[in-house]
Image 1 (spheres, rainbow, N blue to C red):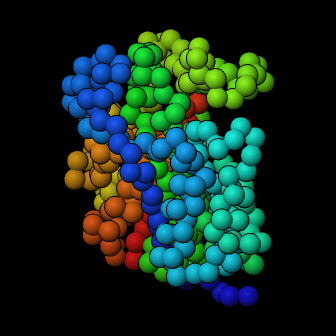
Image 2: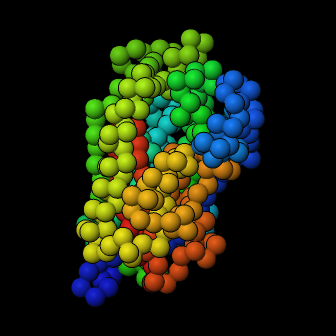
Image 3: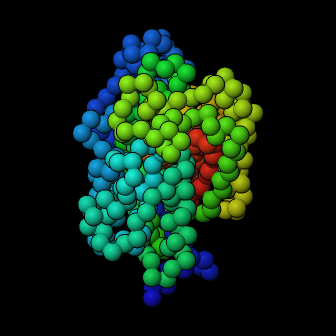
Length: 344
């Protein structure tokens, strides 16, 4: 058995990240025409110029495979070395009842690993990383985990439903990370999460579950899309809890990891409208130079956002030895999570 201890503690770090974004694009102008909402709302208030959307015949598991293959190659390992594979998604799978984790496992040749799915809204990526870390540290025979985040959220949006305006920014893509026990260039420090369920019924796809079963693929009546019930009431609830809980999990994750806000070099969040991100930064006494955003060109890619922007930060040189990044996210339900990553 390999001894992966650094000092007196075992560590797990991100050995590599791979990303895939579909080539299809829909612009804010096009969404404006479809919805009847002024383009300035998307450009100025939300901060989005365009987003990438998958083709009709391009599916979440396939995008996940593409990102996973890049991550495996960059890590310099054989797919057969992967011990656990976690597939994270906030949206639809290729089929209603199905295992995309097993599909990715087979497609990349990760034979023999344990593969399963995680759903926690747009928090799924952070949760998947945390679960994988725990599994690696808890089993002396496990050394590598693959976390795959993949979304085709664009098919769940009805641009004629103005109540769903906050969903018009969701786009498609995938990101994957190889986690390695004993990784020496970075380490995952800690994890903090919280759920506030008072608005749990506000955002949902009405049909397709046991309460209102229906044949898959029917959107004629609009009930196969994500709906937001009582958006004004939802805004009121979230105005009282959203920012508070976002800040709470970030601060708690740093506290659990023995770090403080003064140590943070980059805060990488799920992609939200500009005013909300500004409130988050101000609440932490951080400036715009402490974050990277992708909403302008990619929209909000659900579980993909944090790994996607972590990859961009590393590739652009924004993170290096001595840096501390915090991956923070929120998800419908509502739920919040944060995880600091320290670089050496």
